[in-house]
Image 1 (cartoon, one colour):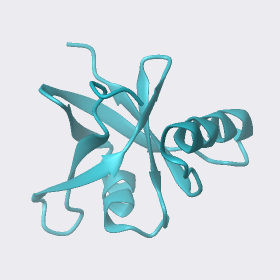
Image 2: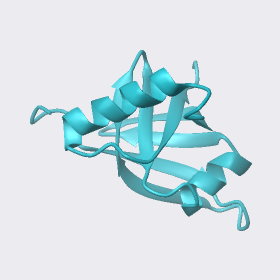
Image 3: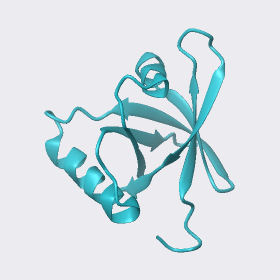
Amino acid sequence: MTDKEPVYLYLTTVGRRSGLPREIEIWFTQRDGRYYVIAEHGHSHWVQNIITNAAVRVRIGERLFSARARVIEEQAEHQLNAEVQALSRQKYGWGEGLVVELTPEVQ
């Protein structure tokens, strides 16, 4: 991680019950034009919000964009899941958990 590379990504989901925006600060990695975040627990509120509504907003440094989020199914996409977890371990020293992919929407 370089000094200029942002450490955190700010992810805004829509509350599945309230319909209100919910923002979290979370570690992230990048691969092939997509961003990845890892939930320590699959039952986290932000993960449940994504399962209900995949439309999210992402802020990294000064950059703000809309994206589609999806949970990576470890069994179905084992290689992608393992690669993203390895990227996270390399960047932060931790990579266990549920991988979520954020695909920026074309503007």
